[in-house]
Amino acid sequence: MKAWVIGNWKQNPAASQDVDTLLESLLTAIDDGAKASTELSNSHCNLMVAPSCIHLAAVSTRLKGTPILCAAQNISAHSASTGAYTGDCSAQQVADTGAMWTLLGHSERRQYHQESNECLLQKMTHALAQELGVVLCIGETQTQYDANQTLEVIDGQLSVIKDLLVQQPDIAASLSDRLIIAYEPVWAIGTGKVPTVTEVSKTHQHIKQTVAGFADSLNEMTVLYGGSVNADNADSFAADSMINGALVGGASLKAESFLAIANAFS
Ligand code: PEP
Image 1 (tube, rainbow, N blue to C red):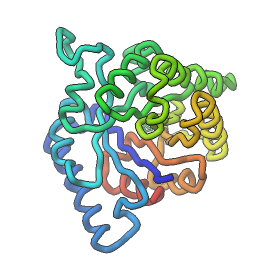
Image 2: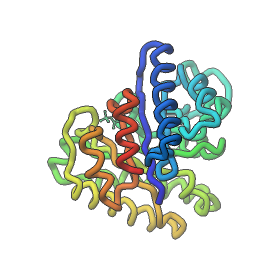
Image 3: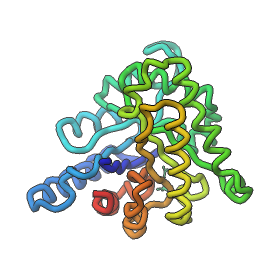
């Protein structure tokens, strides 16, 4: 299975000039890598970045024809492509920028925007209707981890996929190409704390089994780990066959560390 390394830029960088610098550093390094036939010619690893919505169109345009894909960080829960929804961007508007994926259900959206399974079901439906792939983020809080509730929490968050398939059974066959799950323990995001590789591996195994139980066609689900992945610890996650890549926040804002992580998974 080809690994994925995805950079979640969150509300960064502040200036569009810094976006350009980051993009050009990434593209130059990949170009140089391809010329030198190093691992990072993108043949073994899918690369994607998710800029903030204000930079989405520019980034998407710049990345057209390059080995890096572009994703939105979120889409509107409203079904209309246009309308009186101040501050929202519809799935159609995102698709129109050329972006082919969207993150959904990141813990910061769940925490600061009260995104529920109902809301995420709507967003997934709209994304897939516009042929956007979905990176569904799930994970437990520190309190839930301490109370040994990780699998229970994850099962609740994964049930949105089951609900989607109840509503649209016909999409089951194509869903594995358009859905990626990112397991991100909330307590590991931006904290420098990470679960052990064994813990992540066991949780990923559970996620894969659970999703395969929703439909036979979902028996090879791509499951990424996210939470304080960096250039130093990426190798250990990449060595485990249950971990199919990484969703990277802080370390994706520097081309060097993002590409070092990509190298680890290549
Ligand atoms: C994230 O926000 O998805 C994330 C994994 O952040 P970080 O890598 O900074 O922990």
